[in-house]
Amino acid sequence: MRFMIMVRANTQSESGAMPEEALIAAMAAYHEALAKAGVLLDANGLQPSSNGWRVHYRGGKGTIIDGPFAETHELIAGYTLIQVRSREEALEWARRFPAPFGELADGEIEVRPLYEFDDFQPSASVERFPRIDASLR
Amino acid sequence: MPNPTHRAIEAVWRIEAARVVAHAARLVRDIGVAEELAQDALVAALEHWPRDGVPDNPGAWLMATVKHRALDKLRQDALHAKKHEAIGRDLDALEAHVVPDFVDALDAARADDIGDDLLRLIFTACHPVLSMDARVALTLRLLGGLATHEIARAFLAPEATIAQRIVRAKRTLREARVPFEVPRAEARATRMASVLEVIYLIFNEGYAATAGDDWVRPALCDEALRVGRILAELAREDSEVHGLVALMELQASRLHARIDTNGRPVLLSDQDRSRWDPLLIRRGLAALARAEALGGALGPYALQAALAACHARAHRAEETDWVRIVALYDALAQVNPSPVVELNRAVAVGMAFGPQAGFALVEALAADPALTRYHWLPSVRADFLAKLGRLDEARSEFERAAAMTQNARERELLLLRADAMRSGR
Image (cartoon, rainbow over the protein chains, first blue to last red):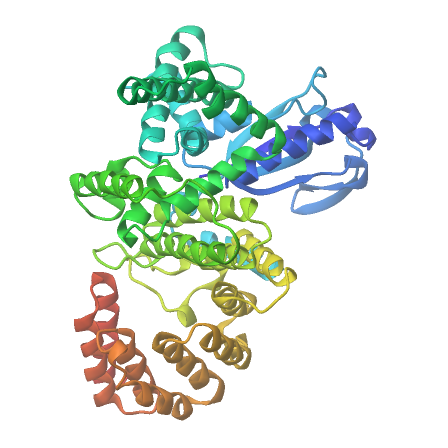
């Protein structure tokens, strides 16, 4: 089972300021523990939304809207992808995640299970879905 | 119905069990005893945590608890020895000599002690004094944290058989006085080969079940991958470890393409490559790059990973670089000569240089006694015969292969191909 741990953005992460040394160390230690337990698949930090954009769809037309975006708390600042044997194991690893903006600062992470291959019934659309990935390789 | 706390404890246990057993084993130098002590620590957790709440650092709690149990055990043993042998030594002195301060000093001296303990545990579980079956069971039990009934189910064996196998393995280690250590120098390389073999065997048991109706048992693949990834962190400088991890990641990337909706196997060339898992391919290629970056000639696992990478890089089967694959099989035949490698090389030669060239190599192998019971030989022969238009011979070879395989799904596929020869495709 794969789970994605997402770090919610805040004004600090949106400012693009690099985290403090202690936080970097805590994150490194946590991800090292994940790797040593053989459960880490992928992890990345995301740049502020001011460096990104959105595509807004309406009436069959897509419009590009450049960042930054105001609703900071709705944004994602980073993610960690893990593979574990049970939901409880994912819960336990999530519990160990360092407070994402420093030990005493407010912060929030959100964890979501990924759809597994077997969750989908075979269909023409499902067949096409991973092909998009494959073409990017 | 277990309550939430029990499920949380079980999850913590799955995460920590191997480390806890490894820690205890270094103290008491016996993995059988270590596992019992670890179980005691788990029982203590099951007693305390539902009442007092799960501690902030449950891993540290378990480690401290098992350490105390281990020290108690050593004290008792020392006391016992003193009584019986009437050693006129002061117990305190003995204790100080045998356990706590000494161990603590070592703990402080080594930054990554737990990692070392885990590595010791892996090497001990895969010790050559044990049968291959015992190594597999012990590795799944100690490193995978799998319960006996789970191992039994994975290997389609009665639970009692697996339980007995594990008990016997622990006894063998004790009687052979196998030290709880990471072997040094030359011994390390041969022992590492045994470790890698065990992990890959577990993976393959899941990937292509040797018996029964299930073509794949993905849980075993996941478990082997997990242990492999752990090992890659513990033995970062070992090229073959990364080679094996790369090989498993790349093969696992194809898990969902290897069977059709009816559960029948699909050949590599016929697989829908859009079903390959791009994340695992990326991880596999990265692990292969790590193996290559460590320098030196590639070992058999890294070479096999390089072979798998050739397929992974081809977006369509027709884009496969068969000439490079032949070259890699040449290299593999050098480091790991075997008729099975030669057979695979023949297939690659057939793809790179035409069926006539490949078929000639297969014919040369047909007399090899090592391949007489290997169902891929008639299957490969049949495939070449079909390509050469010798359909009657191809059909009887497919049928022969079908009769030789123990996998029901595979047999079905081979009989289908035999049938296709009759109708002239």
